[in-house]
Length: 416
Image (cartoon, rainbow, N blue to C red; front, side, top):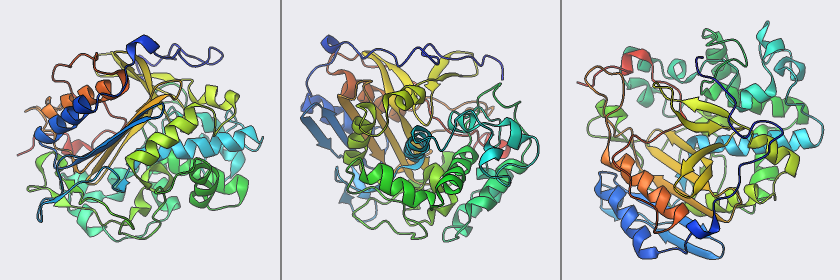
């Protein structure tokens, strides 16, 4: 992949410095409410968020949890957090690394000869899975085959299907290798299902149960869990609406869904409050020894089509620049549910945001890029406000950067 390069905090240099304390102000609840309202008014049905600064806290939730009944959202709703799950999975892998059971630079095949067939099992390391430099393709398009034809029928056809990790991994591994292992970067959910299977091999335990015990419970989270094959979220939650860039009009409710298609890559349910607690516990050293936390924050540059770095991806966590310095976290998106959670490097200040309308953006006429959407700009503005305080400048309209696989070719075309 052209332009692949280690980020500034490469191995041995440690994490970047914390943001200047002078740039970070106490929580302005009025401004935060206004920032959340701006997201809702930009076209998102419902938004719910938690912000933490030391002992200070803000919880807000404008908009609708159910557009049919008019039920309002609440700040503490349970939500499908998608790829934020990857940080939890990475923590579990690094915990096993700290115990000497997993060497990040050993080939994946060393932990199970059937995990990756052929030469890739000898070339792809655990670290490459964690930071998406394996070159292994994503399985999503094959798991939902209508997407390859430019339709979303399989989202409905597979709503209550239970699928095993091995089947999903098989889809990703069968796809052409994107680049030689370790020479590029491409986001792939297959990597994190493979990591779940590595955990299974080295511990002899179900990886979701292991993560629940060693990460979720250790962090003291009360409303975070893997739903398994249960399609309905157990606690109070919003309806989750999917537009798929206009292919589903009006947006359809996918709040009930069997999430075995996401597993250790993206199946977790959580709340904004739990996510702020989790990232605080992680970045203050409560979940990992310092050596493993430093490795987690050793990154590779992720660049856009124009060669500009917009994200630095570590091991299940990424860093982005804000007006008050770098912030660490992850975003997530599944059918109908979007999440974004980030923290200051020292773990003193966090924000988490959930919203219940997905793929509301539209493609340009050539189908080559997404058009700026006011909700994206509003979310970026809210992030900066939540992490940096009232001095954060309001951004111009920008496209929200996300860590997610590329669309199948038939969907990367003008929406009619």
